[in-house]
Amino acid sequence: MKNLVTALLAALLCLSLIACGTTESVNTADSAEISYTAPIVSIEETIPDETASSWSVNNSITFSLLQNTYPVGTQKFTMVLENRGDSVLTYGEAISFEKYTGGQWKPVKTIDNYGFNSVAYLLQPHSVRTFTIDAWFVEKPLDAGLYRVTGSEVWTGETENQRATYPAWQLEFRISDSAQPEPDFSVYVSSVPLQMAETIPVHIINTTGKDSSILLIPHLDRQTADGQWEEVPYNGQIGFCGMSDPLPAGGKDWSEPIQTLWGDLAPGGYRLSYDITGGETRTRTAGGEFLLNLCGLPKAENFPS
Image 1 (cartoon, helix red, strand yellow):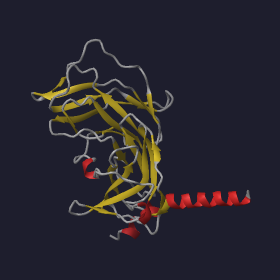
Image 2 (cartoon, one colour):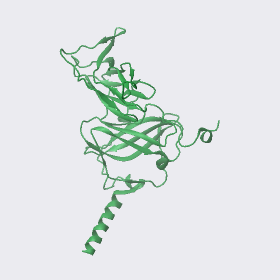
Image 3 (cartoon, one colour):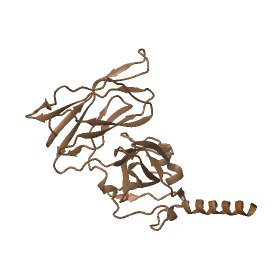
Image 4 (cartoon, one colour):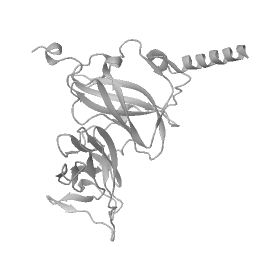
């Protein structure tokens, strides 16, 4: 019996050594735990070229579309809600659409007898969530043109005494024959530059409506002066476990320690990405861009004037 227990422990140790390793071992193509299948979808194909429309509720709360241009006939649009403040935000689900025609905004025709649930959704402090803007009540599919979607009033505060009401939010977007649909998976960091950040807060978006899985090995790229992207090397021999983690429908929150993984980072534009592994016939990349201001050290030490 003692020999059997010893053998089992040895086997478990071997399995753990295979599953976890340094950055070099997890990135090899013949890794048993990360067997990719061609073709690989590059990150350039999954991130929109232009900044999407956004709406600032206040200095701490921002609503943004996942992208700013959608294909003709698109019915569902993902809105990202980011609360960087200390107060809970309350919002509803009622929306309306308008199209810019003849120099003015005109309501889009809707079906008869439609309505919205009278519910209040909560966006907790220091959190990111997504909301599906659904044009199910529009009479005809949206054709090419410039549109805006308007929500309802929102408010912060948990009691009447704390309550602060804000105007209805509005986001603009285009419908185009040449536009690409939203990516099934994407990464959202922040709509404002990270200031003196110790970690990169991440919300990984999954718009498929189904649970998936993700390899939580972060790949960080820095934007160069000529607009190209270069990989940021890991800080020393960083080890990762090569096993995938669950990625629920809707998404999940995550964070990456900057100093541990990459050391000091210069200010600028960055791109963070992960590989999606959830039973796909091809390897997908979930990625997102963000801006970083000062990291780790005071300004006088990092950037002498």
